[in-house]
Image 1 (tube, one colour):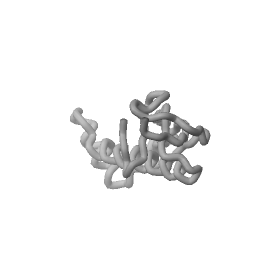
Image 2 (cartoon, one colour):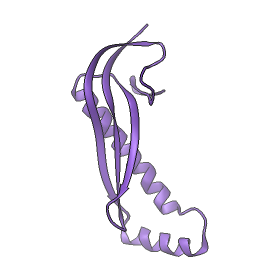
Image 3 (spheres, one colour):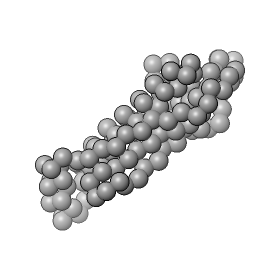
Length: 112
C-alpha cells in the first residue's frame, strides 16, 4: 500500500484495514516522454558496451512518477481519497518516445 499525503493507492481490489464506502469510477494518469539529444547520444554510447542505461532509467522513473501524480489528481478531482486495482502500462510511440499510463478505480475509503 502506497500512501501519498493521506491518499491511498493499492494494486489489490481492497485496502486492508479500510472499508470502501463509495466507488467514484475509472481514473488514469498519462504522460509521454522523449529523451533529449544529449541523453540519446549518451545512451547510444552506453548501449554499445552493455549494462544499465542510466539515462533511460532516470527518464522512466520520472515518467512513472508524473503519471502517478496525474492519476491521483484525477481521482481527487472526482472526490476520491484512494485508488484500488492500480496498474501501470507502457508503450513505445516511436524510437525516442515512451508512453506511461497509470490506471485504476477511484474510491472513497474509511478506516475500519
